[in-house]
Image: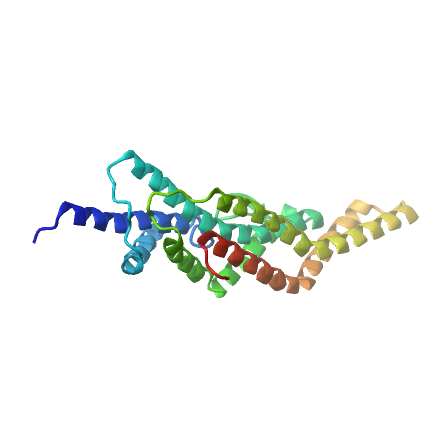
Length: 259
């Protein structure tokens, strides 16, 4: 059996170029994009998803694989995949940032652990919030939604050599501001409570200067911080749902679907 050269090139284009976009998304997305997930597993998952998705994807109109333009098209597909996956990274980093703010203000920042996803030493509270947010991400079927979004992007952003609109990159930068806003809202109640506690210790020290505020206040602040974090943990789910909807809205604006 013989296949014409044009047919072989079309087959390669229909598989390799979508593989670049899908693998770029998987390499950076929340959960699967962590450093402790082997690269072979990520690549194998990307190949399987591509093999399943290729029959339903529109044929690739760009088939000039042996040219300099091919390099530009691959870079474009990488940027689109990274942009889609980066939205989920911002979702999780919102709660990591909130946990780090709480840890530093309550004195719990001394308890640090190594984050396996990026290899850095982070406060234990931030790591706890990261684990909780990651579990909720999978409970909400975030991994399935990410795959659905990247497959739908081939309908709106076909591989035809044309460049992606620059406005989409600016949308990602603008939406990054919600990460700081939501993190501050999540940490606002515990921070207010800690402010009241610190002011109380200031008044007590002023009234009784013989008391050693450092030996008494620091242990009390640690215990109060743990109690306050536990008491305000119910707000975590509310803020996660809000940030989840913002992420879905952003991804729909990127791939041109209806939220």
